[in-house]
Every structure is written in structure tokens, then in C-alpha cells.
Image (cartoon, one colour):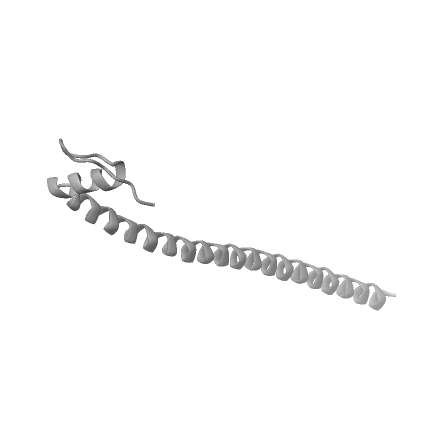
Amino acid sequence: MAKSKKRRKRIMRYLVLGMTSIIIIVLTTFTLGKYWVEIYSKYQEKKQLDKELLSLKEEEETLKVDVDKLQDPDYIARYAREKYFYSKDGEYVLRIP
């Protein structure tokens, strides 16, 4: 009878140890999976933001060129004539489709 109790105690101890180990492994795996998903989403976001940064830098360069052009009075006069149909005194604006 004493051997049976010791054996039962040993089996219970192994069962508790095994269940605890399984719970720890499952929780660790779940936590690692969650962090990998978060890292992957941040990586995707970084790729998208890099593309957006590149397009914004190209737009900035275009706008800098436009600013330089708008410093020239001749360019401003020609632009106003073409875009808004302004004319000098004595000139007529003819719009041809």
C-alpha cells in the first residue's frame, strides 16, 4: 500500500510538471508569434513609408525648380499670359482650340 501511494504521488508530480511545462511552452510560443506578427507589420509599414518618402522628395525637387522659375520676372509674365490669358497694353489674346 505504501508503494502505491508513493507511485501515485510520483505520477501526480510528473503530471503537474508536464502540464506546467506545456502551459509555459504554449504561452511562450503564442507571445513569440504575436511579436513576429507585430515586427512584420512594422516592416511592411516601413516599406510603404519609404516609398512615400521617395515620392515626396521628388515632389520637393519639382517644387524647388518651380520656385526658382518664379523668381524670374520674364517667366512670371509668360506664365500669366499662357495660363490666365493676360496681355500687355495693346495686345490681343486669341484663344485657338
